[in-house]
Picture (cartoon, rainbow, N blue to C red):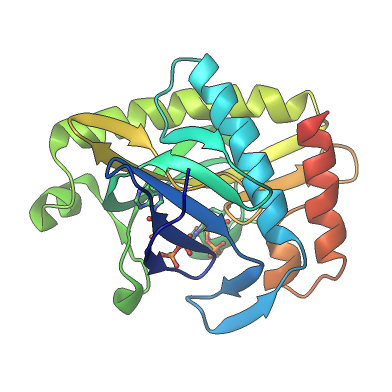
Length: 234
Ligand code: ADP
Ligand code: UDP
């Protein structure tokens, strides 16, 4: 599949059109940002890790009857996907309290949630991606009630599949972010699932194996991404 004009350059990926108007190519960069792009850097070979890992996980989810945008992996940094109209809502699922939720609720990082917590954020860089309720989503017209219901059901099923997958690889799936979009009349999982968008802790040592190593200057960032890829691909 031939890469045509660039449609978009984001913080971590570029999107290219193809000869098929229904399909686009995601190109995964090494660029890393955090705190609403106030912190910038690069993580060597991150694009390769995120592309290969996302491809593996999208295949896994498709096997479990969860519809995704994934068509095929084209190269180490390129993935062919169905073109989506992305809903401007980021979905976060949490199994262990961490990050912004630990801060907001004043709970220590690492306390297990009694059930998976689902949160929605308004994908809007100017506003800093604020937390929104289902009513806010409807007031803003970001998604319909039916889309919200389906997104929630898919997200919880995805959590079940991914928790088991990572557990078998001695990794705790602490939390993760998903994006969904419409392709014709179908709601599909889009974007990526990778250490940039998940919190992944080693089951025994609780060592962080994700983007928090970059966010919090913990060192061994590249090593953590490579370790996750190794375990995901085994
Ligand atoms: P950001 O836009 O936040 O900087 P990225 O650098 O990851 O993020 O850019 C990728 C962009 O592509 C995101 O805005 C994402 O919502 C969008 N996207 C993901 N999958 C698809 C798809 N299948 N079709 C169209 N857009 C997509
Ligand atoms: N996340 C993401 N993109 C965002 C915000 C969060 O991929 O724009 C992921 C993040 O990597 C983590 C989960 O969503 O796995 C929950 O993030 P949190 O709300 O704790 O925010 P953070 O403090 O990480 O910005």
